Length: 203
Image (tube, rainbow, N blue to C red; front, side, top):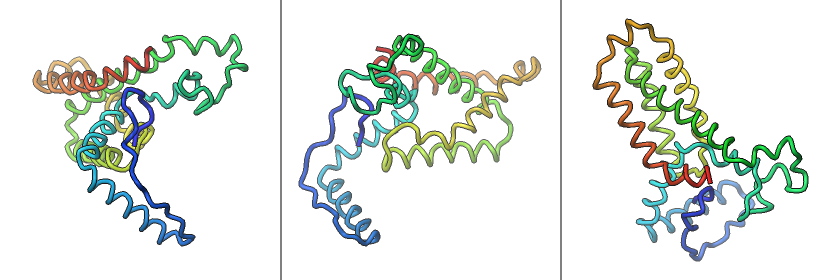
């Protein structure tokens, strides 16, 4: 269930009957049955993989970097620009600066969004945002794989980051310290959890 990061190996191989029915309903039932059998046979692996995918959802999107920069381990996979067509104008994207700027901007957005979320007085909208993020995190950790599935809640993070940047001096004076510390604490935890993946991206 995960392909983006090489430090984790693929799941164990198991006997999986092929779903060959031409009826889409029967094929879906067959796939669900296969999934249930795998989960019941490997509960520990399922939980571990779900935790990994939940963390990956918040990592700067390696999927983008892999499509731009040819990889040694997958020289012909997920590549938009072949090695031989990599001209001087595009060669600069091979350097670590592109990944550093992209990852740094994303991490800054997350920090500003957390500060805006904790500082916001819009309780209904804030509750809706938190529930939406939890929903997509649970959905992706169990069903999906790559971090592009965070796109549905990304606009909400941009809204909160913009709200925080739009605060007046008076707003900053009225900020409660525990809210600021809580936002920084969550961001630091996220940073520590994603640090091994960040190292992989920047390398």
